[in-house]
Length: 380
Ligand SMILES: [Zn+2]
Image (tube, helix red, strand yellow):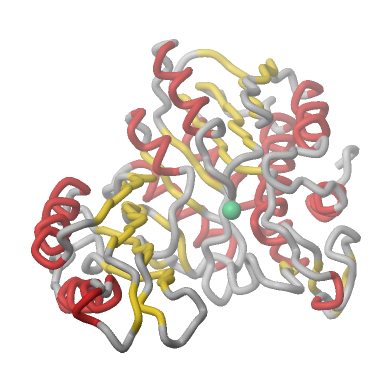
């Protein structure tokens, strides 16, 4: 490969400090390679977010290869064995922030397309390949894939398939692919009471005492039983804050943040309604500020899941588990466009952790999986 293989490109991407929403030149690097292949590049940047939309081909099917260049902060340098922005190799692994999430996935996609295009002579190719790359997947996600998806909708562009290069494997490459994600709904709750001396509770109104039974009730609730595709909806409290710091003061307010990861057996409206009933019962004065960051999506058995399963099996010998757990991903913005969506990438063991790494052997194999998948979808 004249341009250099997956390892080289992954290293070049890791060396760019692309902390959300800074793309730090990653899209430029990828875009240069894609334009040499005849891709038409369009930057749909907004609010400091870099979004690259690149297409090659005509007509359907339209396959989107999707990913993000941004990374989560590495944290203190001392916590890492090596500099998170200086890719380093040891014991068969490549280390650096973004090694698994998801600069290796992006690099593997680019090299897969380079090979796929180079092999274009023989069997008739059909359809269009597009890259949708954003620098805001780890952040607020408002001006990233969501924004580009809205533009595609306005233009009447309907992707048939989307392949997201997030790290999805559990222990070894190919053991798991993601065919759906749960929805995400959260709430910032403020409970108002009345501040006072702990010795005179009658003259105060303790918001912690009001909140505790409400939380106990919410934690004991069974929201749904899940369904064939999703585990039951889960409710988790992530933050709880109250108190003035003094041990003899009843605080005036208490704050709580909680989050649902919900299955398609519930809707965001259902969950909000059920929670509101509990809050209204226990908390005479409160404010609930909700945020809804994704509907669940699920890709049924069909052309894409079959092609992905076969591609993984051909390259790794494994039949992947079809998984719907884990956090949210940008797949949630692509599925509503009507696309079948699967996520395939390297082992996710070290994502968002110190000493993030990817197995070097997996880089080329992942690229071969994408290449086989494209061949299955786009060869007449
Ligand atoms: Zn990611």
